[in-house]
Length: 475
Image 1 (cartoon, helix red, strand yellow):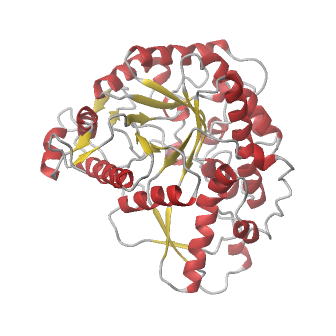
Image 2 (image 1 turned 90 degrees about the vertical axis):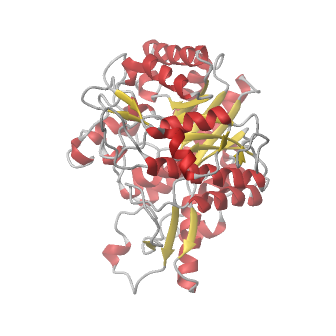
């Protein structure tokens, strides 16, 4: 769609432009202000779990530099900032009264954002479960869902007078299947049945939290963020087509169906029947999980291309720790496309596919892209960081967003991932996703060319015609 001022791609006038971060990835201050350890503190301090032995103890030192960071956001023209609250900073033991020092930090941050005309968008849980709750069983334990709802109510009561937008969970797939399936993420446990229990209790906690917050403030925008993938079979063989169905079930539908339809996909339940009988689902759970939402957040990075088993699996391989319980023999491939520094194929059409699929197959709901971005190897040259590959990535995916809007998808906003380089979970500080470069030794921040480009996109509410124009505005 072409706008009157000559842009090839213009976005709706009320389209919300933002950027996103997560508490453990940027805050630091791990032992300050009453904060206690989370599962990521424990995991990252365990030898061999995180590349380079990195931890989030200091990270980007946002705990001490939030005012500086908000000024950088304002300089980019951000309309909204999506950030997460650190549960162990607000409720150190995962239960009981709030830690006032922790609440005061977030109150100051929110007030600073509002003072600069930036709408705060709060995520309650971005993977940093208080270690005390993990010691009591973690997400596979049903009680953790109740503890999360109490924490949500506590945080919402403290900040709800100035924050209107709330996300319960960020990417519950990662929390459940990376944390309790393969063990690649905190807390590092490897049990397929536990992973599926964790997924259910994460969603149950989400539903309970939505109910508690809606009872307090019916007009607030409440949602969940799921990481979705376009899933394609390597070939049209029956085995590959079935592999795609299986991975789509465990990656996408196992969350979308309960949250938006109030039921688990029957084929997924069948796929995992040798792992669990879903006996953890109790009467009334699905009604809670499917409590109506105001918005749906979607994180998108790439596509899965999958194939069926290569011969008969041996028992050890079949039961090895996996992100895909019941489908451990599915093989993941690629199509030879350019990749990011995470080795993820760059597939902007997959974003259109995901958005149109959700709009077509599920009840109508406003959608926001709550994360989309790329890691590349960035270098400081003469005090500047030029990242044309990231500019091209953002440009292609924003054009995909515009295409989806044109097709009728109710896409209301876009949050770039990430505002700044940060602790990239099990990769430590070896991967850079930020629009702002962070020198971790000095904590100096340097806006990259992608930051300048994104600021111009926001200012004009649209995209230009040619790649050369995009690069000129990024200089």
